[in-house]
Image (tube, rainbow, N blue to C red):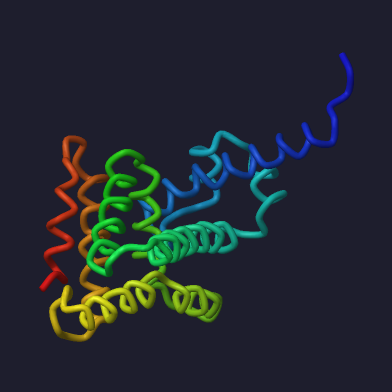
Length: 198
Protein backbone atom coordinates (compact mmCIF):
# COMPACT_ATOMS: atom_id res chain seq x y z
CA UNK A 1 0.00 0.00 0.00
CA UNK A 2 1.50 3.34 -1.03
CA UNK A 3 1.63 6.30 1.37
CA UNK A 4 -1.07 8.98 1.09
CA UNK A 5 -0.35 12.01 -1.04
CA UNK A 6 -0.30 15.52 0.39
CA UNK A 7 -3.69 16.15 -1.26
CA UNK A 8 -5.15 13.05 0.40
CA UNK A 9 -3.80 14.17 3.78
CA UNK A 10 -5.34 17.61 3.32
CA UNK A 11 -8.66 16.06 2.30
CA UNK A 12 -8.66 13.94 5.48
CA UNK A 13 -7.86 17.00 7.62
CA UNK A 14 -10.66 18.98 5.98
CA UNK A 15 -13.07 16.07 6.47
CA UNK A 16 -12.22 15.77 10.18
CA UNK A 17 -12.58 19.53 10.71
CA UNK A 18 -15.96 19.48 8.98
CA UNK A 19 -17.00 16.48 11.06
CA UNK A 20 -16.24 18.45 14.24
CA UNK A 21 -18.04 21.56 12.97
CA UNK A 22 -21.09 19.58 11.89
CA UNK A 23 -21.41 17.90 15.28
CA UNK A 24 -20.76 21.18 17.08
CA UNK A 25 -23.44 22.94 15.06
CA UNK A 26 -26.08 20.55 16.36
CA UNK A 27 -24.79 20.70 19.94
CA UNK A 28 -24.72 24.51 20.07
CA UNK A 29 -28.08 24.88 18.34
CA UNK A 30 -29.80 22.43 20.68
CA UNK A 31 -28.07 23.27 23.99
CA UNK A 32 -26.96 26.86 23.54
CA UNK A 33 -23.40 28.01 23.96
CA UNK A 34 -23.30 28.08 27.76
CA UNK A 35 -24.65 24.54 28.26
CA UNK A 36 -22.60 22.95 25.47
CA UNK A 37 -19.45 21.10 26.54
CA UNK A 38 -16.51 19.80 24.56
CA UNK A 39 -17.53 16.31 25.66
CA UNK A 40 -20.92 16.87 23.96
CA UNK A 41 -19.12 17.89 20.78
CA UNK A 42 -16.86 14.84 20.99
CA UNK A 43 -19.85 12.53 21.41
CA UNK A 44 -21.82 14.14 18.58
CA UNK A 45 -18.86 14.37 16.19
CA UNK A 46 -17.50 10.90 16.84
CA UNK A 47 -13.93 12.12 17.31
CA UNK A 48 -11.56 12.27 20.27
CA UNK A 49 -11.01 15.21 22.63
CA UNK A 50 -7.47 15.47 21.32
CA UNK A 51 -8.63 15.80 17.74
CA UNK A 52 -11.09 18.58 18.66
CA UNK A 53 -8.28 20.48 20.36
CA UNK A 54 -5.96 19.81 17.42
CA UNK A 55 -8.27 21.85 15.18
CA UNK A 56 -9.73 24.35 17.65
CA UNK A 57 -8.33 26.01 20.78
CA UNK A 58 -11.67 26.12 22.60
CA UNK A 59 -15.41 25.80 22.25
CA UNK A 60 -15.46 29.58 21.73
CA UNK A 61 -13.33 29.17 18.61
CA UNK A 62 -15.65 26.48 17.29
CA UNK A 63 -18.71 28.61 17.97
CA UNK A 64 -17.17 31.66 16.29
CA UNK A 65 -16.27 29.60 13.21
CA UNK A 66 -19.89 28.44 12.95
CA UNK A 67 -21.13 32.00 13.45
CA UNK A 68 -18.81 33.29 10.72
CA UNK A 69 -20.21 30.66 8.37
CA UNK A 70 -23.79 31.51 9.24
CA UNK A 71 -23.33 35.24 8.78
CA UNK A 72 -21.08 34.85 5.76
CA UNK A 73 -23.54 32.59 3.98
CA UNK A 74 -26.44 34.98 4.65
CA UNK A 75 -24.41 37.96 3.48
CA UNK A 76 -23.17 36.22 0.34
CA UNK A 77 -26.67 35.00 -0.53
CA UNK A 78 -28.05 38.52 -0.24
CA UNK A 79 -25.20 40.03 -2.26
CA UNK A 80 -25.75 37.42 -4.96
CA UNK A 81 -29.49 38.16 -5.11
CA UNK A 82 -28.90 41.92 -4.99
CA UNK A 83 -26.61 41.67 -8.04
CA UNK A 84 -29.31 39.98 -10.12
CA UNK A 85 -31.07 42.12 -12.76
CA UNK A 86 -34.41 41.97 -10.91
CA UNK A 87 -36.83 44.49 -9.47
CA UNK A 88 -36.40 45.09 -5.74
CA UNK A 89 -39.56 43.17 -4.78
CA UNK A 90 -38.44 40.24 -6.94
CA UNK A 91 -35.10 40.29 -5.09
CA UNK A 92 -37.04 40.00 -1.82
CA UNK A 93 -39.06 37.13 -3.31
CA UNK A 94 -35.93 35.30 -4.51
CA UNK A 95 -34.30 35.73 -1.10
CA UNK A 96 -37.36 34.31 0.66
CA UNK A 97 -37.54 31.37 -1.77
CA UNK A 98 -33.85 30.56 -1.49
CA UNK A 99 -33.69 30.70 2.31
CA UNK A 100 -36.96 28.86 2.92
CA UNK A 101 -35.99 26.14 0.45
CA UNK A 102 -32.70 25.77 2.35
CA UNK A 103 -34.52 25.46 5.67
CA UNK A 104 -37.04 23.03 4.22
CA UNK A 105 -34.51 20.83 2.46
CA UNK A 106 -31.50 20.94 4.77
CA UNK A 107 -31.84 20.68 8.54
CA UNK A 108 -28.35 22.16 8.85
CA UNK A 109 -29.60 25.50 7.47
CA UNK A 110 -32.09 25.75 10.32
CA UNK A 111 -29.34 25.02 12.85
CA UNK A 112 -27.28 27.93 11.52
CA UNK A 113 -30.17 30.30 12.17
CA UNK A 114 -30.24 29.13 15.79
CA UNK A 115 -26.49 29.78 16.10
CA UNK A 116 -27.08 33.41 15.09
CA UNK A 117 -29.92 33.70 17.62
CA UNK A 118 -27.67 32.33 20.39
CA UNK A 119 -24.89 34.74 19.42
CA UNK A 120 -27.20 37.73 19.51
CA UNK A 121 -27.86 37.28 23.24
CA UNK A 122 -24.36 36.31 24.36
CA UNK A 123 -22.38 38.56 26.69
CA UNK A 124 -18.75 38.79 27.65
CA UNK A 125 -15.52 40.35 26.43
CA UNK A 126 -14.59 37.26 24.43
CA UNK A 127 -17.54 38.04 22.13
CA UNK A 128 -16.42 41.48 21.06
CA UNK A 129 -15.57 39.76 17.76
CA UNK A 130 -19.23 38.80 17.40
CA UNK A 131 -20.23 42.45 17.16
CA UNK A 132 -17.80 42.91 14.27
CA UNK A 133 -19.32 39.90 12.53
CA UNK A 134 -22.84 41.17 13.06
CA UNK A 135 -22.04 44.42 11.26
CA UNK A 136 -21.61 42.44 8.05
CA UNK A 137 -24.99 40.74 8.26
CA UNK A 138 -27.59 40.51 5.55
CA UNK A 139 -29.80 43.02 7.38
CA UNK A 140 -28.13 46.02 5.78
CA UNK A 141 -28.17 44.52 2.30
CA UNK A 142 -31.87 43.73 2.61
CA UNK A 143 -32.52 47.22 3.97
CA UNK A 144 -30.84 48.61 0.83
CA UNK A 145 -32.99 46.43 -1.41
CA UNK A 146 -36.09 47.60 0.45
CA UNK A 147 -35.05 51.26 0.09
CA UNK A 148 -34.76 50.72 -3.68
CA UNK A 149 -38.19 49.10 -3.57
CA UNK A 150 -39.66 52.11 -1.81
CA UNK A 151 -38.30 54.40 -4.54
CA UNK A 152 -39.82 52.10 -7.16
CA UNK A 153 -43.16 52.04 -5.33
CA UNK A 154 -42.97 48.27 -4.72
CA UNK A 155 -42.25 48.33 -0.97
CA UNK A 156 -44.40 49.87 1.74
CA UNK A 157 -43.12 53.06 3.38
CA UNK A 158 -41.29 52.79 6.66
CA UNK A 159 -37.94 52.13 8.28
CA UNK A 160 -36.19 49.68 5.94
CA UNK A 161 -33.83 48.38 8.62
CA UNK A 162 -36.80 47.61 10.88
CA UNK A 163 -38.59 45.84 8.02
CA UNK A 164 -35.43 43.88 7.24
CA UNK A 165 -35.21 42.86 10.90
CA UNK A 166 -38.83 41.64 10.90
CA UNK A 167 -38.24 39.75 7.63
CA UNK A 168 -35.23 37.86 9.02
CA UNK A 169 -36.81 37.39 12.46
CA UNK A 170 -39.72 35.62 10.76
CA UNK A 171 -37.24 33.37 8.97
CA UNK A 172 -35.45 32.60 12.24
CA UNK A 173 -38.78 31.66 13.79
CA UNK A 174 -39.55 29.34 10.89
CA UNK A 175 -36.13 27.72 11.30
CA UNK A 176 -36.93 27.07 14.96
CA UNK A 177 -40.29 25.52 14.05
CA UNK A 178 -38.56 23.30 11.49
CA UNK A 179 -36.25 21.91 14.15
CA UNK A 180 -38.95 21.58 16.80
CA UNK A 181 -41.56 19.78 14.69
CA UNK A 182 -40.74 16.89 12.37
CA UNK A 183 -43.80 17.39 10.19
CA UNK A 184 -43.48 21.20 9.91
CA UNK A 185 -44.01 22.37 6.35
CA UNK A 186 -42.20 25.55 5.42
CA UNK A 187 -44.79 28.12 4.28
CA UNK A 188 -45.09 29.79 0.90
CA UNK A 189 -42.35 32.44 0.52
CA UNK A 190 -44.99 34.93 -0.60
CA UNK A 191 -46.04 35.28 3.04
CA UNK A 192 -42.62 36.79 3.76
CA UNK A 193 -42.79 39.00 0.68
CA UNK A 194 -46.13 40.39 1.89
CA UNK A 195 -44.42 41.65 5.06
CA UNK A 196 -42.75 44.37 2.98
CA UNK A 197 -44.78 44.54 -0.25
CA UNK A 198 -46.81 47.66 -0.94
